Image 1 (cartoon, rainbow, N blue to C red):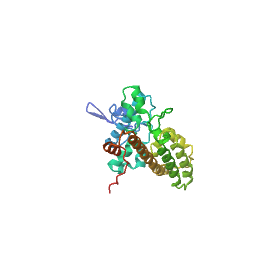
Image 2: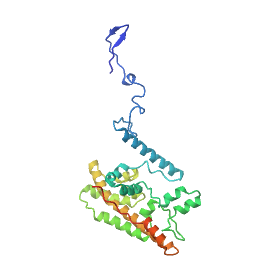
Image 3: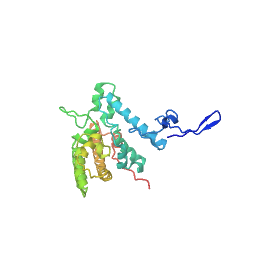
Image 4: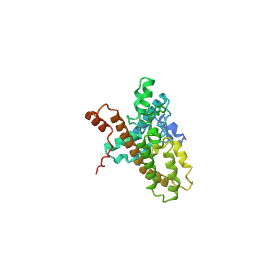
Length: 286
């Protein structure tokens, strides 16, 4: 209800009129051009402009990456993420810049030494196929594409096969399953880690399909707070799995590069040592 006093020919008429709110405000005032709304539900939000701008830019970047993947005949994955949860798992806000950059490149799959990224600038199909091929696994009768899934799940190099098994066994052995919720969720999480796109879970970046699969282990009495606490804590245990496998891959690439050298050139060896040197996290700021 909106009450007005009507003035006509300097005479006051105390007339009460009923109008809807949309008729009393400028056109567009309650629309997206005037107010910030949740991009998914349309609910008006009272949040700082900077936060909404950053959220909008993130969504635009995700859509742009999925559009680029479509041009390469790859399925879209970047709008189906839990990046905010991943940031909490990795504790990105409190990490020094070098360490944060390391995990962000893994989280956003930006490592340029992966064949899936190297082949993006290829001008011919032949060049793209060559750059995409995993040189550590190829043989006369077998070729594999060098993707993140391949590295964390299917890589056949002995160093990585051993590291994957050790990391999965250690993650379960070192984690105490004290509650019924943990006994139901943790084995299911490890099952998903060993499935396609499982490396995303280790960093806290779940897809809708993975969350749906996980939900089959939940009960109606499980609280969202308890589920979030279990997944966050266990995901932090799995981060070391990603770190270990990544370091084993760098070591395998260094051995491959060194073995291909025509001679033991000290300069080239130092170059490859710098390129594939082990990652050492910097201490957090005090």
